[in-house]
Amino acid sequence: MKEMVLIFGGVLGTFAVILGAFGAHALRRSFNDDQLRSYEVGVRYQMYHSIMLIISGIVFPFAETGQVLTAWCFIIGIILFSFSIYGLTYSDSRGKKIKILGPVTPIGGLFLIIGWILFTFNIAEIALYLQP
Image 1 (tube, one colour):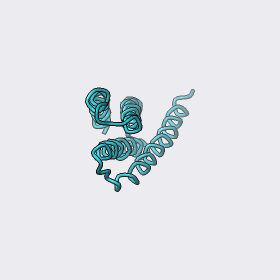
Image 2 (cartoon, helix red, strand yellow; image 1 turned 60 degrees about the horizontal axis):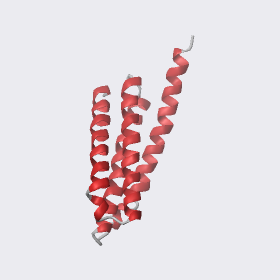
Image 3 (spheres, rainbow, N blue to C red; image 1 turned 90 degrees about the vertical axis):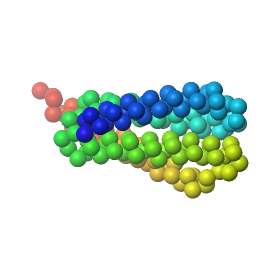
């Protein structure tokens, strides 16, 4: 599990850089300011949570269910939150907004929030265990 989490963190982080550069250069011509800002939020949250996956992969042994759930919440949250924003902004810029993606974004956000809560509990448990 540890290796998989680190790989997901690295791959999703790489895609955040690629998608950010794509947005800054190629999409700037076809997106309006609101669409570009929304797209950038997706990229930023993808990068933040990719870094959290890498941190989780380093600090957690993934010996407990809560640690595994933390990683899955971040992975699912990134995919639902960021990729729904990419789909919404791109389809909107083409005049055919995929409205079904609208409710997907907050569900992804909820997974990210749950991931942070689980991370906090799990890291606190490790910190308490390591105290002399």
